[in-house]
Length: 92
Image (cartoon, rainbow, N blue to C red):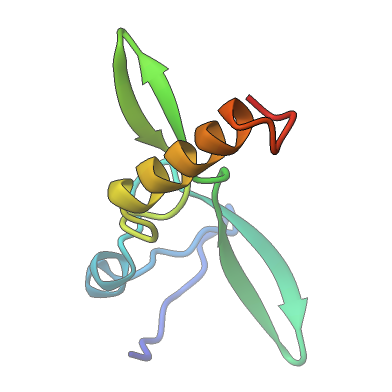
């Protein structure tokens, strides 16, 4: 989708809602801004996807929305713990 937008006096542009929705961009998301060829690029930045334990529950944190499933993360964590218990890894 291509749309013409206008930059304001403060150097801001508004990303059209349809594009924000399709890319799942939300308020507070951070972007790397740079120069590429003869234009400007915006690239979203995310913390690494990981599982955290909060109040006794496993919570998925970081990463773009729905990039990796919680099931995949749980299976990876389970495999990591199995390798640790089996003495195949030093990482708990």
